[in-house]
Image 1 (cartoon, rainbow, N blue to C red):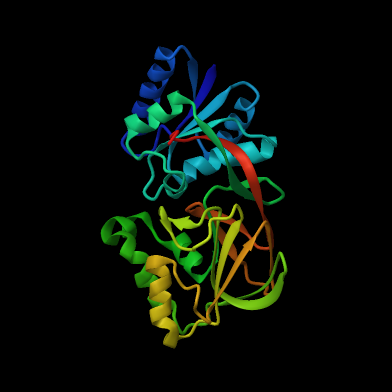
Image 2: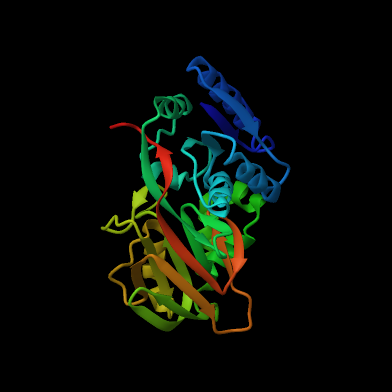
Length: 293
């Protein structure tokens, strides 16, 4: 078997490259071969991994949901996915946690070498030119996340997000959007919308069901009096019983802006394309290496 190992050599303090070398050694000890897949920027990285789909028997991604998105985008553009191994290296690692993958590097590598797989779903948008591995958001909180500087995150930590969100309450920061899903069609003033490919955020379940669907939460008509509900959403994701929230489970989500103002999305932690967009859930699209238990 011949594997590709994808990583960003410029990320962090070089740990990703060290992990890639260790993974390659483990493959060789198991009688397999492996090559590194790297590129100077995300666009070239997608192209590199897409070309690798026709050459390799499996791909290993080292990093967080952002790195996974590059691999997933290459898969959806190619129209097929190779068996995928994950060595988590991000801050949240939501996708890896959902599928009970080890956070420990050695244990994650052992899972890949063991070779046990299960089919899992991801999503795609932009006519399957862009993957959604874990999360798709738009609205005021997504705008805040797109604007938060790395220096602010280093100084304040994750608390910087709710701090900035609270300042937005009461301001005219909702977007009029036409939303279409299975059995649903409404025009709402959206303050924030989150669509996830799993029922969890940061590895913590936030809805009771775990169907292979897009799990969509839409916060709308926000006012200052709903501040406590907002804080509850930010810290736990649980607002299902709130009159400010619409929750949907769907295979397809169509979003059409009803304003000339640009509404940008945020996908897997990075700034994404602007609306209008259609997000599709691709059930059982990726064969993922998971613990046998």
